[in-house]
Length: 540
Image (tube, rainbow, N blue to C red; front, side, top):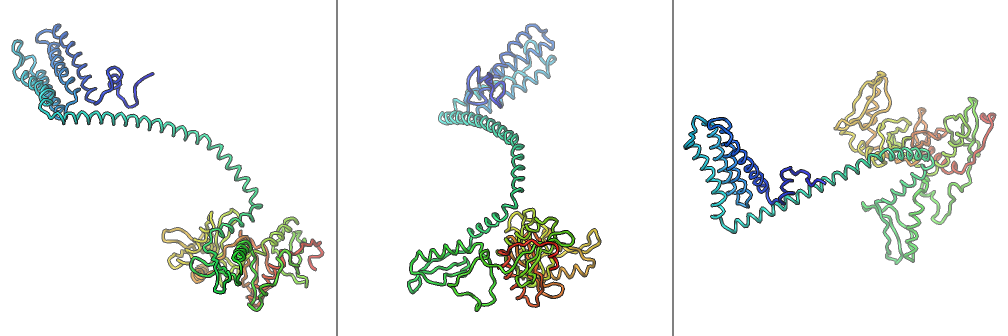
């Protein structure tokens, strides 16, 4: 097995394996200079004996002998643990001697005497050897022993640090290799992970309809868990225990209304509110005088005897439809669209029954923001006018409800700082879009206008209404009370995906009457039975 270390030269490796572990780089360098000097000396003497006095080989032999003498002196000296100034002096001497050798090459053979040589060449060369020798002999003798010892210790410490760094570099290389192997292993498993991901996605899509209600409940529970309010349990001046629900802004949201003689009874009251408030339906009461007494019981929606019946029938066009008829014969509501299969119409009725009770009101006076989840399971927003028209929408879906709510808040709070831009589309219609300061499109009208005046009017409506519009986070569905083209108030139940799932069959002169109709629908629809009718019953 090779003992050659990574990043180590061949000369270094040979020295370490054949001589020993060096303490300094100069130790290795000096050894190999000495070896080269020996080789040059032997070769130079042999060439000298075989050459003519004034020939080129004689010149080369003298140069080789001169260089070998210099290397035989410098090599052993720089291997010693000398002070930096001593080593520097050795190198200076070697440089001077080298100049003498070069000078010899320049003057040979004409300026070189076989008897006496050349005084200048010999002087320069001799001076170089003397300086190099002085660096190796006299400087250490004249130096402070303690400083020499310190230099030696320092060099040994530096050599030890070099070894540590070399080992660290080797460890880093091994670690890099392991990381590369791990990355290759992860890359090899990507296909399996991707396949598993696609399978999970397909399964999630198959289960999406069945898990919709559960997801909504989880979101509501999470919002409840991250409440910005707290229950406070205390003893009043009469010695009775009471509770109140206080928001972090200091506002009292709710209170117990009565005192308890025992603390645990008050705690039970708090737990009852926690368990029953979430998911409780909203029933609008006309006035305080109409409120039931505190002790008066009531039946839940699914236990209330309904005064209406869902009628499922086939129209003359061969489509299946539904309507909700009151016991007095009046048509209360209908689906507004037909279905090719009876089963689809029945499913639509069941969706209305499940959505009607917990659905909340969107106050469109005259506009309101709706935050809803679309068919792609993304959260979106739209600005709805009380006449039912969508004045604006975000055009972008969000993965989280709060991101859509933040987008709405930016529109409401910064409408004056945003820029409306009108343009002509490919169909020569006029449209508008709303841009932020960074150029991002934050809203658009969603529809085109045949004239520029129409799009200008739409912009003014959005500018006037957006900042004051109510915001409703639609759970599964929401009721909208709006004004139709005849100036009458009507209601409809809109699913979070934007689809109208039920509409009132009657217009009202007063908004309160339309809201009363919604309340009756909320009370009766969930418990109404479904009755299949034949085609002849359509006109009944």
